[in-house]
Length: 229
Ligand SMILES: [Zn+2]
Image (cartoon, rainbow, N blue to C red; front, side, top):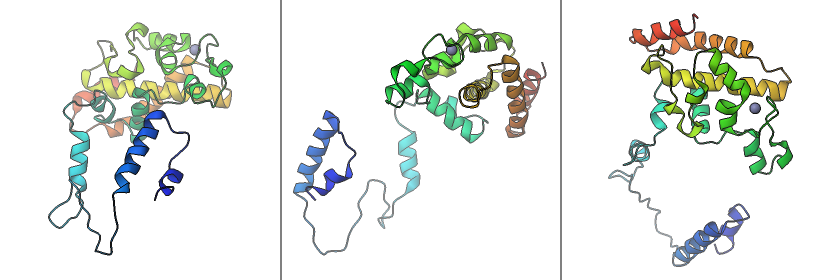
């Protein structure tokens, strides 16, 4: 037990992780084993000691302070893979170049945006700072200055013709397509093109329309209207 635990953890440990490991070893030191039947105990068990997953889910999703990005990311009709992308994006966890430099996967000199070749490519640069993406937002009638930082993307100012019920999935759709367009430039060597980006947004909107809740005619008509222009 003494050395086994240390073999299981990923090196090198931070000072905090080392302190936590030492505390855990201290606690485990007093634990003894016997041949009695193993008995599971948990705050989330029922009377017969079975774990209740619904209680764990409720506890993990109903904190006192709701996560501000939760509704924006998960409560809309975007496809699951886009919601997952949105979650990574609002947590600033997408693999943009500055993030890869930070993880020592790329060198410092490689952080430059491959689209404008002017500034380092952070997540905020990709979605609101790059001259290319600013021209895209302008083309579709959104104010580039109104695009919020990725960590607060739901605060983006949408134009008046966008219904509030459509705003969140629409922001996710545009960001998803901007990211895919960026990947086409970086990994497939395609030229940046606002025309191509707008076309892929329209294609995505058409394929997402079957996901709109049938009862919600307001969303459906606004969605059709936005992409008929
Ligand atoms: Zn750029």
